[in-house]
Length: 101
Image (tube, helix red, strand yellow):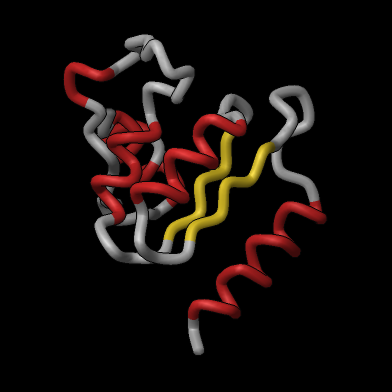
């Protein structure tokens, strides 16, 4: 999961960035419908605020995050066809502003 640090970062001048190691949960299916990324993301965040931008999370993931993450969290759905658009950046900036206080 650290391939971006090897392949993309050096090309665009980024240092190594932290990433979530999904371990054995990679692409696994849960009977409760929670996405395979959700539990690892919540564990990685700990009590810190986090924003998760994805095209695959669902209401089951929102419920899981609300029940298991004590801090602020934003789950933002983006179109897999269009990617991040201006309204997405606006929502992310507004979320970031609320946690800086």
